[in-house]
Amino acid sequence: RGDHELELLAPLESFFSVNENLDFVRLSDWTAIAANTQSLLTAIVKRQSSLDTLCIERCTLRDEGLKEITLTLKSCPEACPKKLYLGGNSIGDGGCVSISDVRNNTKIDLKEIDLSRNSSIGLRGLQSISTALAMKGRPFEKLDLSFIPFGDAGFSELVEAFLDCPKATPKYLLLRYCRIYNSYWKISRLLQCPDCSLVRIDLRNNSRLQSDTAEKILDSLQNNSTLKEIYLPEIRSNNLWEKLVPLIFNTTSITATYASNHSLVYFGDGKSQPLLVVNKHPDKKVVAAFKVIDHYFAHNFNVRLFEKMGAPILAEMIAFVNQGFEIRDKDILGVRMNSSSGNGDSSSGLCGEHGCRENNNLTINYIIARNIP
Image 1 (tube, rainbow, N blue to C red):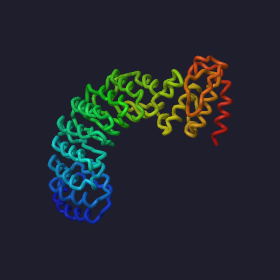
Image 2 (cartoon, rainbow, N blue to C red):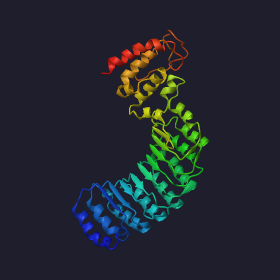
Image 3 (cartoon, helix red, strand yellow):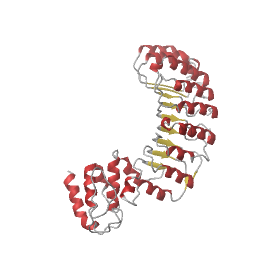
């Protein structure tokens, strides 16, 4: 800091010139970098063939400094890092244009960009970024635009760009403190796209979310199998949890249970949602089977056993439970279900009333004991 900053530049450049194969470089709170960006970045990038992450934070780069960075990166694309973190550098629309030029370079495989806390970025900069990100055939991992007050207009610009090319949607999209008020509903359109690749979206610390908008977002997740986490601002709803249950655990039929959402592990503004814990299991067939069995036991099934079970064991249990009931499902977990008539109401299926539930518990427990060490 202060007068010592410039004195350190020369030895730092020498350090990067002789030390190769670094994969992570972070420079923060160092204003001298802004005036000497090109020489320092040349020393870093041109000698680090395995550089994965370049993090320059709170160094007051502004648009001019970022332009020098992008020129250096374009001059040696084979050494360009995959992750570029540039938070809190007073970057504006001009800097976004420079970033877009890097993204448009087909020789550069840039996967993550952090432009958070650059409050000077406006609509023109967002248009440039969103257009570059939505290039066909160029998948993207993470985009962080938090603490940039672009509002509803900027949010709409981003969503529309991703709707033009859903496959280019970042897997992780962070938009906290962006002053979004009335355009949340547009994210539901994106989540309904079969090719949307969103895994996590963070919209916390924006304006409150109305109940009808939250429900619309929930509806859009019915056929979405990629999104795992959606963090929302405060929701004005007292019964949203009740509306979430059918999405995660539809018990109207076995087919409906298997068609439920098995990917979502978090939804909301911070409140506990224990049912979503089940979806954390990596094998979604096992998750679906557990939900069917759990409903058969009236939600008293042993979750600890579920953690130890594999798909074949649950399949055997489902096959046994369904004996005597008419099942429309053709094949569940590779086990063809019995459709012969027997004791019980043949129209109710697994998710109806079961007079034989208590009598069958002993056999179910036998199946568990035989398969669990």
